[in-house]
Length: 359
Image (cartoon, rainbow, N blue to C red; front, side):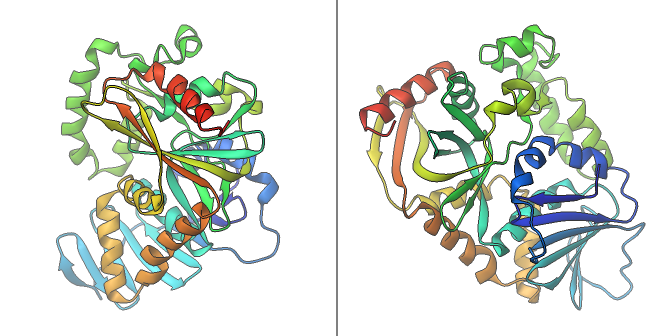
């Protein structure tokens, strides 16, 4: 497998040096690369995230700014994750890394997408009759359940169940990263579990394992290679390429955004309620921002203070892109009862969208 990822011709990720973990990381984007081929850039420069694998990160010319944070002219050094951040120009972000830098890779892709006039959105997104339906929200609301149910119907295709890319002109680009399935997903994906491809941990052990993972994660973050290994062999969950669950025909490369529905769980609500809304860009930015490692976001603010990055090119551009992308679509907020079962989310969404004449 090559050492570059071209993200729909909008941005790219490339590696230099010997990165023993590179192939595994790139391999996780199998479906993203497959559907993005039609948009590969030919000739024109696009924003680029460059990862340079280094044996060490010297501090001889750096001064300590805070715990784990060192700075020098033209660079910020993150001792916590073993990364040196450099910004040669607005269209290139350089990460010099001693080992796997997964948190920085996720955040770095967002930064280079912003430079191209696009952004990740935390939400499920599906295509129906040539129109994209975006369902942004927090984690645990029922996005994966919604995708799983709608994809069983022939006229729906998946752009993403957790992340999707939205451009300033309102185009939604598919980003079908691996599905993360837990024991409680058995009822949503009975075929996967019956084939033995589900997580090995039983449902009753989920709470105990979650507590163990919560305790161990801060320790494992100090050793990125171990953290990567733990993620790959977590008995509590499995990661599957969407194509292996829904088939290649169930994936969509891109579609014009037509409808955005913010999904919200509300305690004490007896019946679902849907209402028209405006200004969802701010909500979407807030919920998406929370998906990134807070340490990386904090150091980005330090980089802004150092003049390596421009706040307008990060936070200002982010909101402007979202507002532009949402401008021509219909926007709604759908409040769901907190106790509404995951298996009922898709039926509820379809009924309310149909009542509004949206499908």
